[in-house]
Length: 130
Image 1 (cartoon, rainbow, N blue to C red):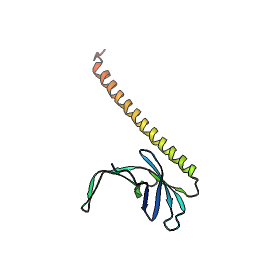
Image 2: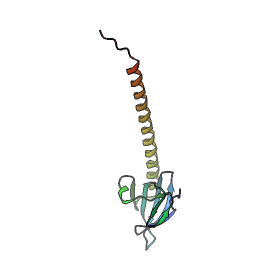
Image 3: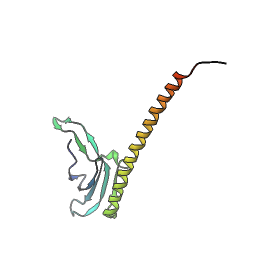
Image 4: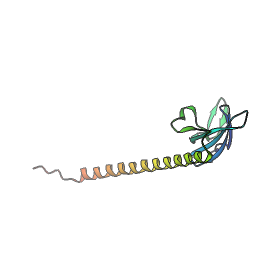
């Protein structure tokens, strides 16, 4: 799997990776002409499978957030924010995703236990009527 580049030029800006985890990236966003820091972009890293587009083969790879991700799993953070504040937002988002995964796992285990218990109760009870 090809990982995201540490430096990217897209959407008329230049981006440089500040921090990443396995599933979250935080990039500094620079003005293309002045090189001045204008903000940060925080997003959940998505992946694309091996694919051929217009005859060109692209390996399985991590991808930058798309337009539809903004406000859902991607955010532009103000350039007025300090780097420490941006890093704090990054850490909070990483923790939020971890907690979300753990909650889904617990809910899945409860569902599996409930189904198993229901089956045992239903099939294990006697059918006496009074």
